[in-house]
Length: 438
Image 1 (cartoon, rainbow, N blue to C red):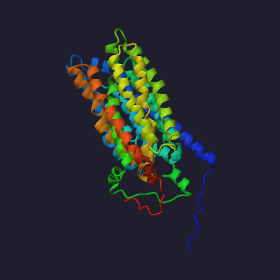
Image 2: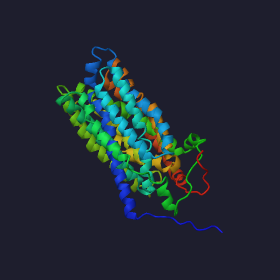
Image 3: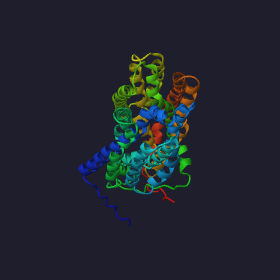
Image 4: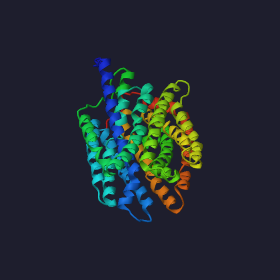
């Protein structure tokens, strides 16, 4: 006779406390990550001045600086995604953060353009150890019906960190030197990474197991995993839309400080970075949180709510961005704010789709594959492409050209909406017969 299984259940307040502390730490780590990314954009014109003087292809090369970071980031993400499904995710997060902080310091020490390229590649590798696994920790700590809001808080670090990166870079450059924009991020990263190493992983699939009444075998065979992910329509449509959005957003974010200073007569880089950073932090934060809330709130009325919310933001952002390009500064700041709001509106919902339509034991791999796709075909291409077009025409023309991908992303998300409910149901079925990882 089969003996009944006894399930050890932790107190609810303990679960809630662990989840909150995990969310706060991951939010801080993500904040530092995006500060590091955009501090480069905030000082790239000064780096060009010092390391690429009189180079006729300087803007193309500066765009490639962002690309080399992304190449290392996306190539190593699948590797760490597989490790994240097999070993302690907090260990990967902590070690990756520490190594990334040291590489950021190396960026400030570089005395040549090649040296900065090498340093940014190392930053990319370290971030690859963090990005695929961090959202899976939250997905294991919070149930499906709350993930939109929780992941929105986590990804709120993107606009806030980006804004702080622009502002911090401009401030350090004005007060001391652009190199101190990188030096200043080393110690906070080392401390946060050390704290992460003291955390313990939640059980994989914990939220789904709780909903199903207890622990089950949630493992899966490694063979055919990518084929399984590409067989999920929502995963495919979400990745296509995120790739198109990332293509536009990555290129635009890198070049925006230079574009504004070129269009606003007499404007200084420090002033532009502070204003742009302020707009990004306010509108981007609001959009990320509201988008996550809207996706969760509309879920009971529209089965594809996360996709519909994301598509609405991106499709609305396209004409607003064109109006920004057509309007002189300082009046154009109004359209900058509106366009930024629309671009960040999808952040929580799209990542919630990825978490909800993939099974717990392979979720880190799913996020890692998505990272590879959206960067390989997205912002690894657009910054140098914008620089290439700008060297031959203007930044305005270059940005208008890449903004067309707003429409591609919005349409892809609309197409994915009809599949979301069924894909979510399948991914969150807890079955006794899942085979073992091999």
